[in-house]
Image (cartoon, rainbow, N blue to C red; front, side, top):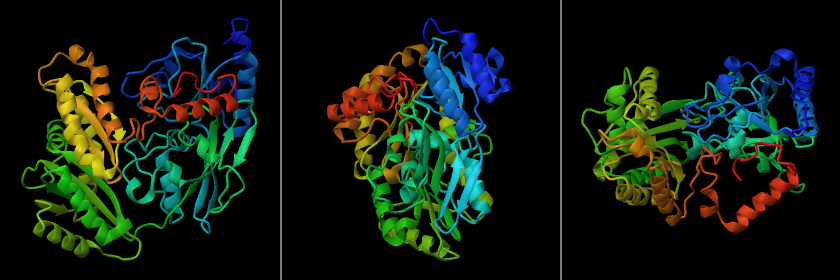
Length: 473
């Protein structure tokens, strides 16, 4: 904020817009907004401002521009790269969209719903289900992350293989721009070639170009049948061959394909209550596969036939098909607890990267060698969405290692992993974004022309750097 600005006058102006109860300045009430879930990024804020409508967001932006204050948009505060956390100056305001939770429209003829940005992902899923539709975006944090945050980070999750990431699930957006004007691009149309598709500027922009206040989302028929199974196999190469076989049999009905090494199961068994071995024996690698059909009532027999063919071909070693909804939930619990159980094994250096699906085995092999070279004895805990090439290439400290000493290797390990990803033509940020965590690395791995274009767009839409300064660029 400008030195001449009067903080009290600014806060009074904000209170007049959103109500005094929705301008939070008390340290104890603001604390949960000021650190990210892994407690790696902390900040200070002049205030937490909680608007209840797009009109209020617009007015807050206009006032902030008048007083020279920067705005950090925040949804459910579940991001892992620091993009939703203010800096340490205490001069920025957090604009929390959590009060904006309306389902504005449900259009079943066009399979679209329009929701406000503060609706949680779980609430969006429930709204779709109540209308006999599926909104397929699925994340571990879906109970607390918000639709606006999902759009701003272009969230992915476990169903990208079949349905796409948030960008592909977004038909239109409503966005408050840096001067307070409102871009009304909440189109439900499947075809609209009237110039630039502006919504894609804001999907994945991490709040640096505008504040997303509402979104038009694609809906799908609810599957009539689902089959969920754990599969044990020898290697990532065998996993990809098995994926190819599954896609030849089921095409787009393969909705999830999660790959993980044995160490992930070991962590869960040690630390996650109620988790059991998914198969009778131990295997070097595992796949959690889910197949969903809207056209048939029962697919279990077809899935069992897939397993028989894969066994005969030597692609898999064992498989277990969930026999009930409870067992399906138990299968998914094994996968969903993996990020948390890593933390109980000491320092975990996390890398959210993607490569071409065919390059996933090379990522495992080359990445393991690269990490071992800079951090000998580290434990590779690389798992994730192999069906779309997104692997959470995480590295646990060696058993008995000093946490501080291992944490000091963060930069070296990151550079080693990123170098391998770049050599494979991959991305250093698959679904968690850039934020602060990868901001300084981005120029080394992004095409210079692309980066210059991004800076030009930022300068054009936010010339005073009001929105989320210091993030992404």
